[in-house]
Image (cartoon, rainbow, N blue to C red; front, side, top):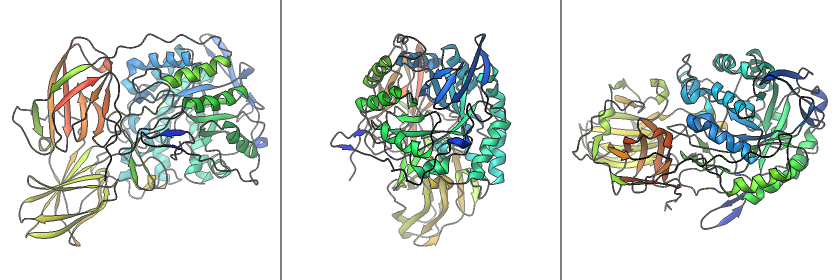
Length: 636
């Protein structure tokens, strides 16, 4: 998705503003429809058997065709890693109840290949099961395999190990990148090609790359990705998806591929008027209709007008235009998976991907759901009457309880890696979490400590003394310090999320990525400790209080389970684990003040809660709420 604010109503608790970001189409834009053969790339209708029935899917003129009949795609985006597997079917049934006939999902390379050559398609990453469940629920599927996906996801879905190759350029014809992407896509093809409509499955379309027009204009690269997708076995309709301006469309698509446009707000007529100057006599589709928006740390929680979204949807449905709601259900970027934007400064994304979607982060229908459902009711599809909503899932309060056990973060330190200069995470085989840099000075020093290219948030200590913090988000890179000789100088750095959109995507190493200066002199002789925090089994908790960055632990007992939102107000900044699952980051600056704890990850009886807090908060207690809390701490 384009990372500019949507042309929707965005409400601040103190002010109300409206934004429009459409770019007027150039009069010189040309229609390329003649270059696209009717009914798809190979000028044929694709067929399969689904539930023992013979189906075809293709296109002719301005219409998609399912079994030879006009078919309007009414899709909703929902991403399998952001929704606990036990809830997949519940959310899909709510899709049907809204009036949708198609599920759209990105595929997440960094999750499926967390280490080069080692793949994972199990549990919540069993995307084939996700798509089969969609088919069971009567939904067609559009996949967006990337390899780049954006999606407010760390590094736009690229695995961090790509950054260990010096000067590799992602989203380019760099042969090292194409080789890695090709290896991933081959493995993905083995998983999903059998689930195409051409092979008895639900997949009707696949996207080539993702909004490439907002990044570059390398047609050779786009052709390479298109050809890879074909070679690994995807023979369904291929398409691209970009913003509606002439520049973005001309840069982001290829002759022979269908093209969708992405936008938000009520003025769909203007967006498709622009598209008509680019292509005609092809199916029209909004590849991402932004019915909500994302949140960054330190900003306000974004909400968008249900009425504006309904107005744009009404216009598209009445004009026979296909649409994909982005997002139908956002869910949660669990663990360390949230990404970041950059413009004009570094903007890390919060853990919640609520997105002000029709279903909230906990999967509950909101006002926007029913407003949009009324639009679909006025425009019945071939599927007949809308399905009924499933019964609500249980939601619980958890009374406030204290976390009485603690352990210093230092317990998670392993063996150090010696280096003359600081090294980024990726050079040490680390993808996510924290990293600690330690050195010593020989004499007392009063002056300035400067971190060159800090990524992204640093806490500086000498011994037990906290000297200060530095934030990339605020453009901070130097700190006045008084150092004594011989005592360890520690710099703890958190990776707050790699940039997932724009040109800075190419420069995404994490940690201290260049050097550290003390009064202009470079410090050397470092011991580096990686802290991926993927395994806390070695941490020994006690009832003795600790100071500084620390883990806090408590067993709490539930008589019944249900979804809840853990209230983290009063804590500083860190991460939370429930029964060993990393729920994500919290940060007192907001706007997100609660973390979603799915009921399917809780147990009747004893449950374990572990909180890492880097900064000492006002108390050490937590409670579970039935609803999320959004509060932004105003900063000077």
